[in-house]
Image (cartoon, rainbow, N blue to C red):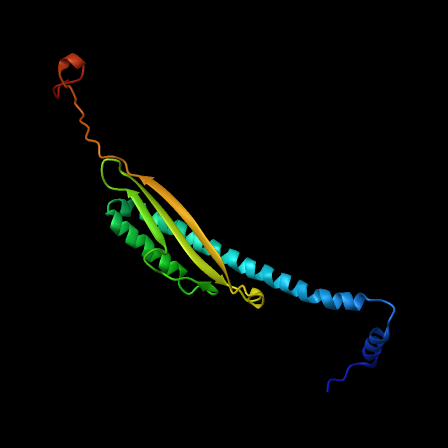
Length: 178
């Protein structure tokens, strides 16, 4: 058995036997909601941190789909590259419940190679963050999601011609002696 110093034992006896106030009773009742509120704040902070990481991955995937190298590829190739990149960045995140399916992340690419030379990539994802404390209240996870959009244009191929007039009428030397 744990031996407490005599002064501490006397304090606890005095506190237990004191019938004048109800501060200890109020403290006892308030500890449970305060603990749950603190736990829910921790769960929310974890979910917000995971959403920030997933938003960064979605931003990077959208930028990849409209990068200079991908602008030369087909829309399907750019879409596959964006999906693969997003999935590689989100794998093994602690506390993340993420299922990679054909619609998660959803990558929509419009435009592309052609007359417009403009491509827009939209990356949308949904996931869940596991809760440690809120599970007591029946909330085992928090839904998180986000969308990122990137647009890029490629300079059109322009053929231009330069004509030099080397005749004496332009006051330019036409011979080596000039």
